[in-house]
Image (cartoon, rainbow, N blue to C red; front, side):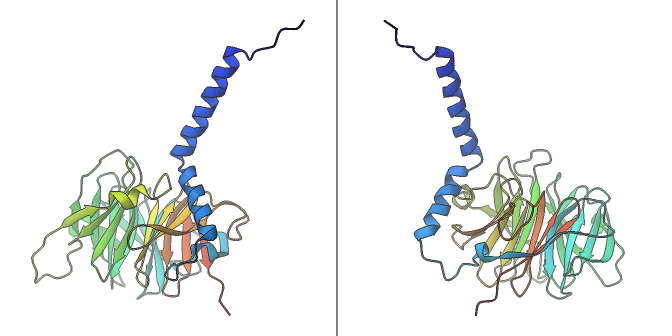
Length: 305
């Protein structure tokens, strides 16, 4: 009579460890929340106020920015110049790009430390971040400007949750509410709202107020933040995550509404976007994206008949 074979204790232990590891990985990558969101959107009616990122398709994929060898970081649309701006953080420069990804001009950055993000504020006025020192630096860019020196610029340091190079990775500006959104990459991943900087009215007192929204931040099912974009028309905020290969649309209350995947086979992509670093949206809703070291993408929503 054969005795029943019992599973070896070591096999059981290894199975339990593997299961715990899978659950931990899923929790870290926010896979459960992301899966629930995707499932929820299947039967939920489309929000009429949503930008509907899932409808966007790639129009320009992985185009090399000719003449640029350094890593690009961040992206912003200038509605006055009708062009894009990005920064490089090794040989620090502010780079102006045409809407088809060609270099228009290069401006040297002096004393900016580790520039990681740039955001258009108003005509000729931008804010650039120094990631490591958590500085926000307001600059004025004239038509003949060839270099910008941080020592000559209005600036402020937040100095919150200091953690090496996991600092300010993204900026977005609400010109109506006069809010500057500042994304901290991770450890912890946060979005601050800065009121009063940059100072836009010299005749009024200068007071800076910084707030954040823990409920909104906890609801973002991504593991890091690389860039932000504020959509003036809807009042919604777009958050780019390189690690999660996702762009997330948040409504005015911080609730996720739609997503755009940066993985191969999604949105018409032939290959996964390797290291997404910056997003910007123009007046027509066309979305632009840059990826390290020097790749350029364009996403457009098909015209509805």
